[in-house]
Image 1: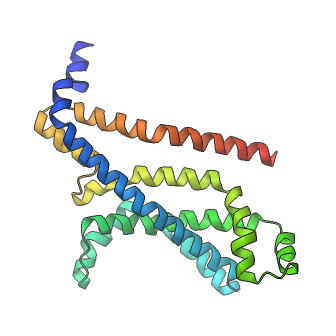
Image 2 (image 1 turned 120 degrees about the horizontal axis):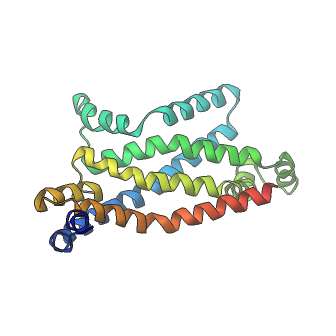
Length: 224
């Protein structure tokens, strides 16, 4: 046990690199705060385009959603960061990571929002039209509030996954939490910083994960 603590819970090593871990945590949070709303917004736009589009447009959007969901975010990041400079567009690491996360999650959020909108009974559309709402205003004020309430659990679950995917920023040498922990490990010759990073991720995401679980249980009860 003592040997384990010396290697994976060494307080002296942790105190030396704690500022580095805090710096990594701040970048992880910043990536999440920027990429999450952009992904939600782009996914919502895709879902609304599907709702307002004709049959060919809908088929095209379904193909786009499937493509984005099947394309690994790691591959997207490599293509964006390392391939675009050959076409005269070199993005900084932060922008490349955000773009990769947004593109990938546009497919997931788009499908979630699309399913939510499709689940709203047709009678709600007809009722909104009878009350004088135009199609766009009916979508915003009548359909979307009901749709979001129906898919809040999968939206939250996907958002949780997006936050965890920010660790891929280490691929482009961004000092997010995981990369900072690896640098700290190299400085201290001790894996304790990696243990600390894992604990930080757990403390950060566990309450959110429990909330998502409760939302999913509530949704199952409502459908029963």
